[in-house]
Length: 189
Image 1 (spheres, rainbow, N blue to C red):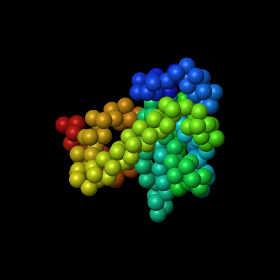
Image 2 (image 1 turned 90 degrees about the vertical axis):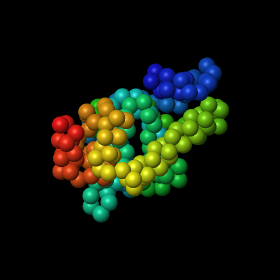
Image 3 (image 1 turned 45 degrees about the vertical axis):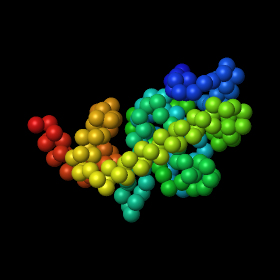
Image 4 (image 1 turned 30 degrees about the horizontal axis):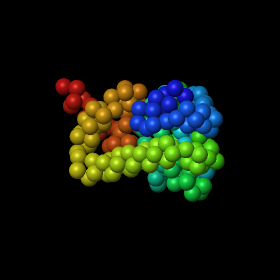
């Protein structure tokens, strides 16, 4: 909970009552590596804050798993469309490493929105940041070479580069694993 409070308080004003409500409406959970949090066809029931560890989000596209999200600690994640509309998700979410999560259920999420002003600001800001990241990722796919995408990934996410498999990084970057291996050898020299 300390990491979530630090994350929010560094960006938004919170009263003691806000902190009490946040503590009341969140639960913590420790999960092991390879634990699936969500499978396609299920309805997403939570918004998560990743206190520690690494999570991947992916979809099955024509029988091939395509990594769309690599979530590092101190960030929020969910299958947003499924969570908001309470419809079956197309996403899978799985722990890559052991993780500590803080989760907020849909009813508690709505209570926070109704009971506080800070939570709406958090939701709006985090949603906009994630949307901007998606737009930047689309632009990168259109304008950068595979090598440039990997170099950018290394500079922006060095911890992920150390702890995520080459297959997962390659999928996330839209590169075949063999091509990424060649790119990594070029960069090493």
